[in-house]
Image 1: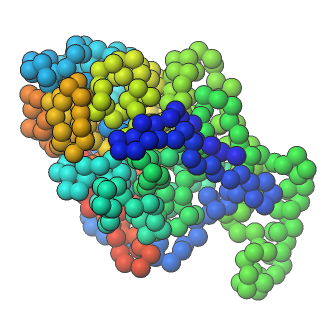
Image 2: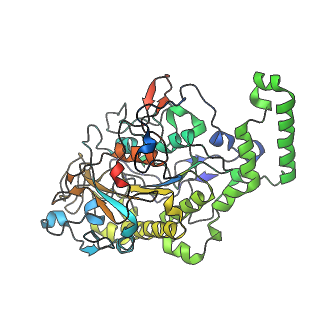
Image 3: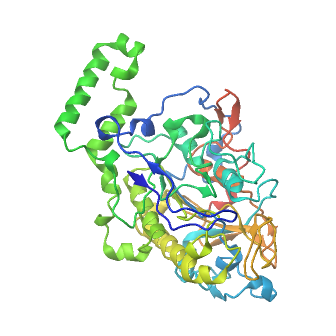
Length: 486
């Protein structure tokens, strides 16, 4: 049984609950992976490309895989990595700026470890969009992770629950267009789903591409012992027996082609083969086994849900996973005293004691680790939230109430970290104004970041996919930020 970790959440507008979703375990032969690995062309999912050849543009195809660190809840850019020490008290806040490895780049004082790794990354300080119906978390997350604004928002301001007609998560598009030949899970999301209030999982699945392109959901705490029933042979089924079943199905497949055409339920298709290979190889189980890591490395990432989840993302990429999305392990609009980034009621104490130390240890260790192993050459790392926080404290920008030291939602200007796969090292891209309230140089829309991810993987962002109504839809209506590549 796979369950979602996390403390009780204090919602912006409703009481929370500790655990609310469980994912079932194994199906036939102790596995339910063929649906995860399956890539059959469902109706409305055939890709076509248009537009200029991307291969001649900077950075195209430099990445083999992606780690997306999604900081759901909206971290305060002005307190983490875009401090304004000369701004008035009610804007600059309580934290002091510190120097980083990048000349002229300052961070907030509670990000000291990441400050020592900025010579390997680009900081985009000009992420910005106008919030037309996008002031709530879920709608903003939907835009950030699919490239499209939501079609329907309920009167409460929350989105409707996930639907088969939703646009696909970026990772789902990636594994359809860049399938892996490795006997490994192609797309993994951990350690908990995206969530605002009672809207769970919006923008976190394959939408109109179909469940075959959903991620493998590891909704467990990687700081605890993991339960991986669907990646493990049942005790009553030995490897030899499973191989024999595979051989039997192969015989049926080759000897009875007409039967295969009539009904595929008795045939071993390529996706079932991949599931067999994955189970037999033990590659996924080994990747998930953090016990194989040096305890000192585990300590460096941080012995907490987020830290061990980020470490797990490195192990998965190393084993052949194409796309890993690590969600900040707290409800987007949860209690900031339980490590939620939604700091309406309190900002500085939770950032100092909870949020920043965890983010700092995990993200700095990931960058250093990937670089030391040579993996940063072809692994694209993106760390971003759905928006930042209001520069001015104690004001309402989204309809929520805020304490005198609280910061509200702020999509007009915030910061992203990108690294690897040819992205410039020790670079600051874009610039915010004196109050970190709007870009004054090189504004970057979240959809342009998605376009950059596709481009880095060798995928034309204007590739057409067909939705559930067989209508053509571009992956994203934006161009990559080519100048990010060094």
